[in-house]
Image (tube, rainbow, N blue to C red):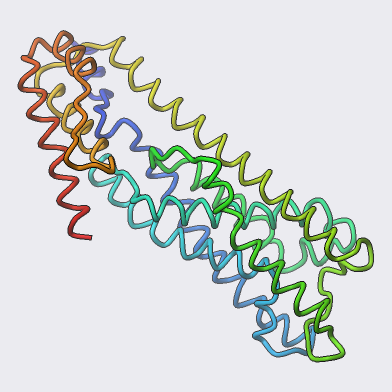
Length: 306
């Protein structure tokens, strides 16, 4: 009897199978938000005091831009992570998943650039004072939040290019301000000292290649973890018995997840999965189909509200 109670207490349905991911995503998201705001404010103050420049010049650094994107994306992630803890399951809207991916790619590019280049040229600029928070703490936390969030979205090559958009815009602006206009004519100073080592156009090309490689690696890791979680779910069903109530919850959750398809008039019903659940739980497949469609319609209504 004791073993049975323990099993029931530890049993996870599809709707709460990855609940601990929501908790980790929430904690790392809050940490990212706090550290980002602290680092941004400290960066502005440092620009005024150390560089004797207008505080707005702090936003000429890609570090600041990437951390602003991080703070913006985790603000949404925090809301959905709370929902995931309360409802035991959630699926991010596609646009939030893409925003999170873009901000993660941007801050990861900055993280790699700091470790590979800035730390060698100027350790203080890489890790001193609030730079440690912006350059190290925030990137690690947003990477944790990104890989722990249960978004069920498979990132494509097209998404990899989208992830590099902020970096592309930044290098274009940087090239115009530093190279075409120049500091003597009112443009930016070469804050990254790019022209000391390479021709500007070569540096831009290399940086964009680096950005795409990082974006691609993030996509591969995320897709692998998503697939691993799906396999874990199916393996769990193979090992444990499921009663009729649990089976309906499972079917409802599946319908909720599948509601993201583009053609709402073409509802795909995974009969093979529902038949498998039917055999495991001794409940009629038709009942599971009803629960599946109910989950699909419920999530679709929520999407239409937004």
